[in-house]
Image (cartoon, rainbow, N blue to C red):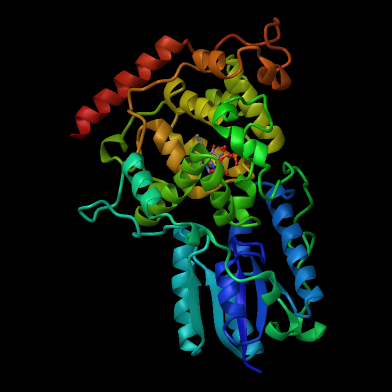
Length: 441
Ligand SMILES: Cc1cc2nc3c(=O)[nH]c(=O)nc-3n(C[C@H](O)[C@H](O)[C@H](O)COP(=O)(O)OP(=O)(O)OC[C@H]3O[C@@H](n4cnc5c(N)ncnc54)[C@H](O)[C@@H]3O)c2cc1C
């Protein structure tokens, strides 16, 4: 019997899933699939990884839901191209449906998969799911890539309709008649963490799967208070792995809080930029910023990583990141600004450290925000702007509630003196960048 494979990637949900809804409506029985990508897993820094544990639990949940509905869920560990080619040989596959992914590795992978499937006369269908506007759907009036968030946001809001945020398909479509059931033998065993060479690490902060209305309504007032764990939605992990539809969160924000809507639009914006400029994953967008003589002092980098800089907000942030895999936005900005300006260390070092530690690590958002802080991006804070970590602290945590949670020794003799003096660090970075920009022009 001819079947349709639905390949889950960063959309680990059944409800409101554009590609899955299309697969279920295609008239062919659907077999959902997840591939644990060997190449991606090979780069994980530790054997016990909280992100992989999260993915594994969500995939198992999907498998159970599929079986409860009368279908079979396939899970494989390997190289996606090879896994799919093998499945095409093992089953009578007519089509493969999946959702678009805009990261450089993913677009290359999908190009190779499309070619292979075409050689086997299998249809390959991609859907927009993780963003509302993708690729070049929003351009400037002169047809160029928008590099000013204000203008992009304005165009986004002008075109955003309630219909665009309606869910795809309905829960009732995920039923026996639309799914394909195969024998246990043919389905093969699903990989376990152990079989892939990993261990469990349940470090992730509990995902809310749609923020409480109270948080959304008060978001603009509470978003910059790191001591308040309910000051922001904390949906970034769900949005990263698609355990929650971005449309659903946007719908809620559109109805209740324009500031939150604007923050979520940043996510679409950075994904659009990364798709247009894939090299910026590892290279400064601004050519004048590509030869900045960063100091890259390894001891100072280690002090930053471990939260031993003598700046309480920076240290609290890094310790929270190391312990939980999460960091509130304002603190992400403070620690990033401190690394690239005061310590004058290459933004890519910080970007990589965040990539290893953040549970919600999202290449587009991470690279976009790091380049913003370093003043190197397509869209950036001015390169000469240097935020004082002390004034940041006074603004966001004046009672030291957040700081004392993570740095209990602050104010005692056990706490180190500042690793660099603010004014000295600022001038050192600004002068060196100014000279590098003049040399490059
Ligand atoms: C240096 C630095 C690195 C960052 N790295 C990441 C990352 O790897 N992954 C990531 O998801 N976010 C990243 N951000 C953006 C932001 O800090 C997080 O999205 C946010 O803190 C997550 O918490 P939340 O879900 O409670 O956010 P909320 O404030 O509740 O926002 C809701 C959602 O909007 C989106 N969003 C909010 N702020 C931003 C922003 N500045 N840029 C892009 N999207 C945003 C996120 O998807 C977020 O989940 C980074 C920010 C900085 C300054």
